[in-house]
Length: 299
Image 1 (cartoon, rainbow, N blue to C red):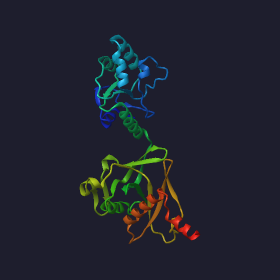
Image 2: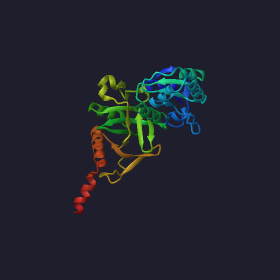
Image 3: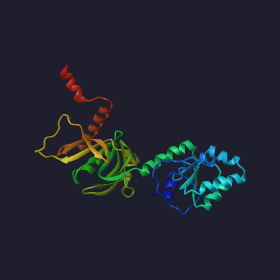
Image 4: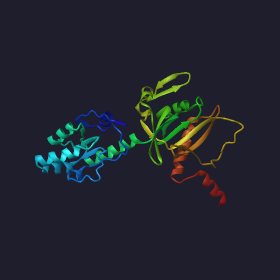
């Protein structure tokens, strides 16, 4: 469910007509422009979507006489429309306001041009309606790459993140990461609002990264581009030393490249993460150091 007050605040809308229906159960992020409905065609009316009135729809209504406008809008608002948004800061017609009040339907106004508002609203609804899960870990922006550190509690995720923040990288979320699947191959991570900018460092307690390191040390959200699993060093395990294995970690059906980093005293995790990110970025551009090494031996 999407609350009307959140919809209004996040899209910076002015409420012209309130309603008692304070939440909507949208099934799709799509919108509807009611030009065909104003002309009398209701065969395929997507009344369950937010309705956008732009310059074209408003001009058509203005050309009608009072009785015609009342008839058009009365039939239009008789459907269970969630809300109507008037773009370009246009003044609403009195008949529109009257019909909306009669049928208890929200009317909002936006200063944005219609096309730009449509893009913003679809993006917002995509985010709201996308599948969400929470993941234990730390999400950081390292050299523009979204890195999710995972591993057992106490393995050193927050300590590694703190060192990376000191080196100029940005914290998105510590301990609890809210992950949203916004497309078939893209995940975005954010932090729950109550613990935003906060970190727990064992032996010290909770710290506020924003207050301590400044606005440049935090980020509101980030795509999850790679995952680094931190695990305690185990002498009985055989670790990949030259990068032959391409591992992945699946979250909500999306496969994300994953690397396992064994932890033991003396290893500088921050530098290892930075190098792993740079190497990941090089691979995305088509350069692979291992392939180059193999090619040189083949030659």
